[in-house]
Image (cartoon, rainbow, N blue to C red):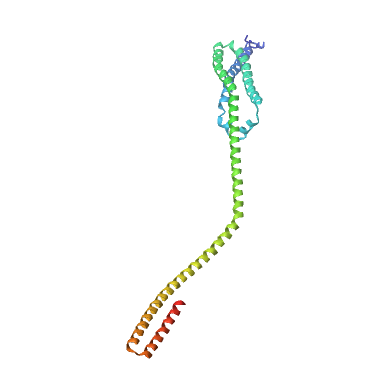
Length: 256
């Protein structure tokens, strides 16, 4: 049952009506506040952007330290405050309903959807917050895995650098040995080329000596035949001895 407005003080008709006017103005103001109480709570819940909740600020980090009971108590405090404001405004609106029943009915009709929406948001917000927290935890785990992968790569790079530092002197020594072998190989190639040229020269000289020996043999043979036909034994003997000496000299040169 709606409460009646308080009794006006008995200080005369004029004082009574002035006090009643002030009371009605105060009740109307409180009735307007009552009409906005439920919608204001819903607007407060809807006005908070999701970026502020998801963002990596100081306020976003505070959600990581809240458990389910603290979240439910936080939202239950908001609902209790909204209900208490609605109840206080309802009492004062009940006082004003004696003067304006139509405005009271309009206020109840306007506040009912807002109150239902605020209650629905109050029920859904903990789930949304839990989902946000789960996403943040998943992102944090992903960052941890990335950091672990980076640290493993850094350790691998450090190990490879140490191996390179250990193998660098060995590589330098082998490179120096390769340079020495390259120089020795070039000297051997030059020596082989010189020997090949000497062999070609000696082969040509050997061929010339062979031709000269063949020529002297033919000459010696002709001189022997000529000496036998002419009867000059002394001349034939001297010529044959000279040809024989030249032949022996050529053969000795060919052997050397």
